[in-house]
Image: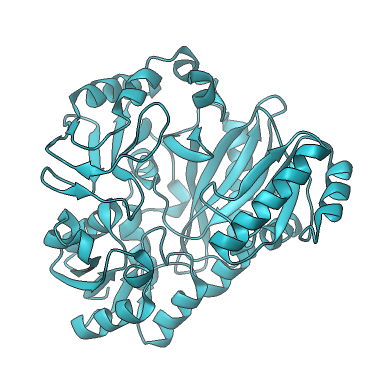
Length: 445
């Protein structure tokens, strides 16, 4: 195992990676912006380096500054966390060309899965189910209209280079398609520097289910169960749970086998997630995208499978065997994660501000991965995630009960936050039944 690790990220995920690194005796190095100098991940690291001002382009996405920090501190490896540079193939290549260890998948795998059309085609060739859709970008509006007519309305208009629920629109007819195509293309050009657009079948009632995979140092790809991610606002996740209440043992077997094939198709190493859409009416599922990094929601898998995924990432990067037996993976109990955001609980609009009170819940089966403490200020420069509240239980009923109690105990004053939304959700009959889909939040509002 290497002796020093630079964490090229911020907030709760940087703090979480630092915690595991220090437990393993690895010197943990943080990089931070000027705006984040007082956050816990900076003070808890063994060493910290300021890499620029608040603007992420000048700090957390500043490759030259991050590599300089690695050199100056003697870091042997870089962990990118999620977001920022985590799925930047050029950064991965540059890290390795600099003689450092990259804690993530190979750059070729990141490139292959970063373009949604290319990823769809690769998955189809590997025998992974994909939804009906275009096999190449819709070159112009006429091409999009022709493709939609062949696929059948409603259709999803998606940015080929998008991710994180951004760059998508739904069209129920040709008139709507003409409007959505221009909007998505313009957004994609502005946000991703690539205006390529794909068209695929849209399922009005669908569940979002993903599989955690881990490409081991010996070349094997294993699947550590699935996560249900259907509680979303604006196509972005708010709640994740494992196992999915919609997945039977037979369906789970098919999900996991498809995810392993997906990883094998790109010689995947390290942690990744194969995201799918599940049609609850037919039981069919379709490949959505592959996230070539650690996911925000990885803690629910850690609870259910009894592994530290960050530790496994570090072991793979160091060429070491996993701490678990890949042939004896089996889920135990149930876990739920709630994303506590600095946002209005009704309209989900960001609400930054100074934190005057921060009291975290505790108790059996309760874990909080937080990025802040009382006295910190939530700035408008970054994602609104304050903390992840993770609860586990012997079954889903116990996990929900613990989630209710933990939400009631969690005290945050200062910035707006969505704890009231979770209190409402945990009493919602549709959620409690387990028979919900990606439209549940809109039906609550």
